Length: 297
Ligand code: NDP
Image (cartoon, rainbow, N blue to C red):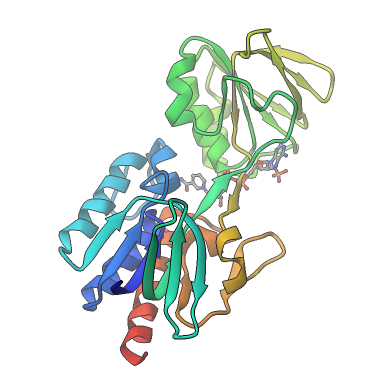
């Protein structure tokens, strides 16, 4: 089996950016794209803080990134799949096993696997009508009442997006203020079909008897009649497949790699910012570091 110079796990801005730098330095790269090529970016409606694009849909930016990587030519190849394990062998070659049990061998790895939306952990979270992606599922609730849970940028952006499609959006924030961008928060507070409830939490999502949502119960005992529940309470970094190769911060994000030839990039190692532009820049830095490693190893 041939040994690739570098395998990049992740097809968000960090992974694609790393792949460009490694390939342009003359090395072969394979990008493992995962279940959702483009990563969390494709679940974002509009991005207006990525330098050079005043207003672009997440999916369009993701496609622009992918087209750029593809334009590099034969140095880059792609595969869809989900990584099961990554082991560094005694001969310093990484053995990457995918869920379908196919195996890739490489001299280096970039782990840019991003993060997964966090679950709320309440009764009813498995009902039809619970979603972690407003841009994917909002359309199913046109002219209906929905709640969105969370107070960060994702919740703010998703609530604005849903307010254009649905009848009414109730935003449930557990603190007495938003954690996300103040400009967005002010904008949201002026939208007529949006109600914001601070210092409240959803304690149960109720079944209408046929597996669909009829309402949510709040910790105050109030019940809100809704047919959709959007959960936007942050993300957990995807690390469990590589736990032996890295050191984590207390909050689960990757602090550093502890394996020579194993690199990390993007949201998975960013406990603080998680912006597309930062992930892309981090991928570029990592790509340069991988190239330096490959030239000396
Ligand atoms: P955040 O971690 O920023 O916010 C999560 C929100 O959910 C907080 O309000 C938090 O409350 C709340 N929360 C967490 N757990 C619970 C719970 N169990 N019950 C109720 N509420 C809960 O996550 P986001 O996904 O919003 O953002 C992640 C990162 O991505 C941020 O850095 C953000 O800036 C960035 N981002 C940037 C965008 C952009 O620039 N266009 C778009 C979207 C995200 P509390 O405050 O009390 O902890």
